[in-house]
Length: 457
Image (cartoon, rainbow, N blue to C red; front, side, top):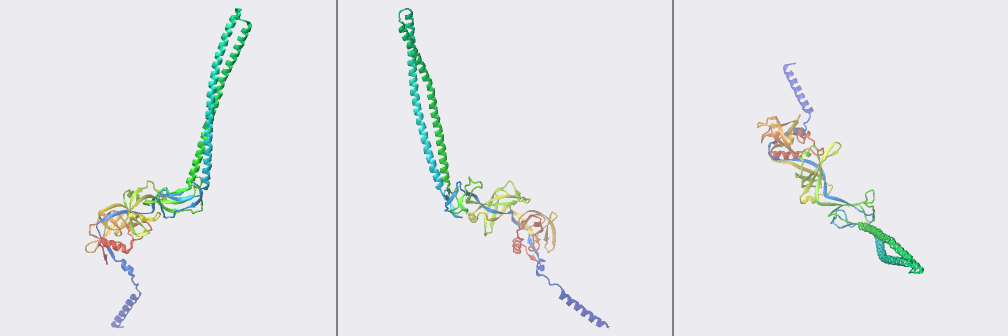
């Protein structure tokens, strides 16, 4: 074969190989081409808010579960859920028929016991009067008997002397002796009568005891009446506070159990919520609780009003944590302020961002520009000629969008961002909520415009 033919065959084979390669080579994926774009942002001085994000629930100032002290049938229920009530407004009326009868029985018992007290006092007065009269008669009789006995004794002594001198007859002496004996007997009788006064005095004391017992019985009946009147009053349930009916658990005609006498705690009739102040109770991870303190501002959002932002302030940080499945969290109470707080309803789920720091002048770069390996932080920086170089940097505070650079980058330098829609490796080392979405392309574009960055090919 001549040299010319060899050249022609070689050219034809080369063209065939090129055509075959063009036919078989894979078509490039547009997304891969896009991912090769270099996205940058400019390091610049910017305010930095460091926040702790948490999720919680909306709660009112206080909630009062209404239960009845009395048992019975509901005959009046004038309130509905979401209705506002004032302190003292009627909430529930139970059938009072049984309690009214108990009150009537109590009043009858009190009337009878008071009559017994009056009768006992009257009997005491009679006994005391009889005692005084008998005491006066007995003392008078005793004095008369003593005088008569002394006189008879003296007369007997004189007659005895006269009889010894033969100046009185035996008959006169016998009469004197008889009179003396009678006077002595009357004296002893008077003494016995005086002694009998002790029994009269005992009867007076007994009458006093009867009064004491009657008064005790009257007091007991009065307490029974008071209990019956209280049970009657307990059939009417009024609002203990100003608030809103958040739940109603009974209907007219339903029989409810007492919250005092029932071992199960009784029937919960309804619940009142005091909405004068609104709070959000959030659970903060133990790794973040050290940065949270009372008085810090907070930003609150709820799914029901995605366009609304509610202002808040931390008012309470729990001293003791809660351990659930070896995860320790602390309850933080955030008070909602602003006129739009009335839009929030108890038990709504709320997202809360607590501002733990607010720095006005910090050198910031997007968190997606930071790379963290083996405990060190790195940034890829573009120089004026477009050449890239990795730098070890010292970082400060950060939030979900930006990180503070303390050392390693100057103001105005361009830093390279991680591939679009990717989480930064620096954030992967942190504890993140698995429900949070990765930054979208729109978010990244907004951040780059804010930082003065661009897309470079």
